[in-house]
Length: 580
Ligand SMILES: [Zn+2]
Image 1 (cartoon, rainbow, N blue to C red):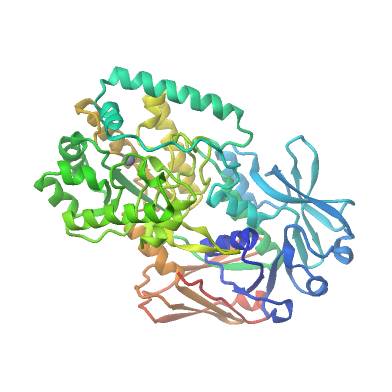
Image 2 (cartoon, helix red, strand yellow; image 1 turned 45 degrees about the horizontal axis):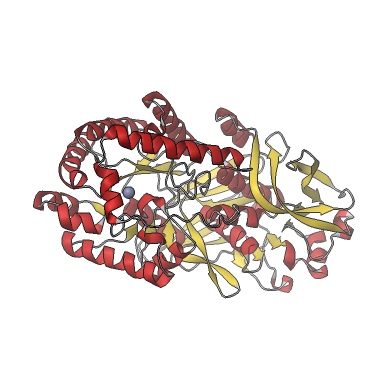
């Protein structure tokens, strides 16, 4: 259905990642002569005179600054590229009404892109303007234009999206990488009386909020819609340019969104003994499928036989070696070694396999994704959607609530990591209380986040710790757990362990869709069964057909006849799966 002509740079990575997240079938081509699909998506630097000739007679979507000026199509010969923040109002004609309605519910009026290349033409482009963008200083210019069968986004949506995924929209902050804490400093913090700890915490957060006020494009707390809106905009461009699109629904039928509750055990004796006991009792009452984040060192020192037996029967992810900031220290090889050792110790102690990781304190650096892949972790959950806790990433966050693969640099190219990311949903446990928020404000933030993720078909990754500091802390956190759990009681929300969510995503990634004029065939190219697969066919204006597929065993395929397809796909296309 779609041929993608894009390099293996940030732009190409971002476009491909967005299509992969939505499982919209596409095929990468190297030359415009290889085009044989319904729609050509081409990143700006791949635009040649041949591409422009093709764009005159075939549905084409150009993304970003074109290497060859689209004179004939848009009357644009010259221009410059600006790397800038910008906003596209949701009142612009390109946005579909359902997106506007959801955005309005959460008080959003625009897609705010923190940083992306924008092409500024010397002359007003010809054709219809489907959306304008606003520069930080207020000037308006065309963002999306259409001429005949060609759509052109003057914003590089690929780079905009990829910048979110590894938070590279922020300029690198020098000298701000926190050093690992010494063991004694860590003990001092965790053993200090609550009043002392509170003074320390409030002082730190006051400073962080003061710095936040200086940032030009911080993430929005508690809900940041940037990632969601970028995906919706790209889908709408495909629908508008091709007349429709085919995708695999994000979650297994009958669910429309997903959630997981992770319980990290912080590195105190209390957390691994009474804290875990109280948490286990609350989980027993709630009945949800838990995922425990366990730190190897404290687990070896403090975990009782009863505690170990409890963890063994549940989903467990590795939460580091000592929780002292060691995931930031040393070379990337040293980090990979450290997290491998932590996992090996936990696997031995708990006698179970561990495939997931969460970085202590949500510490992250460009070395972390490399180390996670090197260590062979299947999934990670260290990147928050909105960061309001980490000292060096305060105000950052990936602004996205769906699983995705982080970009890894390999020589000149970017490629997806073998380790899947499940972004963490802010707020993290009861952390806002430490900043001075009251319980009502905390609960309002959680309620709003869950509602947003539910409404946008995303993944909610909640963290609720076992009690860390003592009985009072434990009671506060178990009460919080009961509250969060209640927010997730909905027949549309798939509440599962982190491993189950990751396994589903892996299976979904390996589905291959073939389209023809009469229907589609979905083949399972992976090594796990895919249950509850739904293929969604969307076509203008705002119509959709949902096809529920039978259980697909590895290697099996299913055929669905769809009459409407003949209207849309005159050219048979073939979707190719990305290797994972
Ligand atoms: Zn932790």
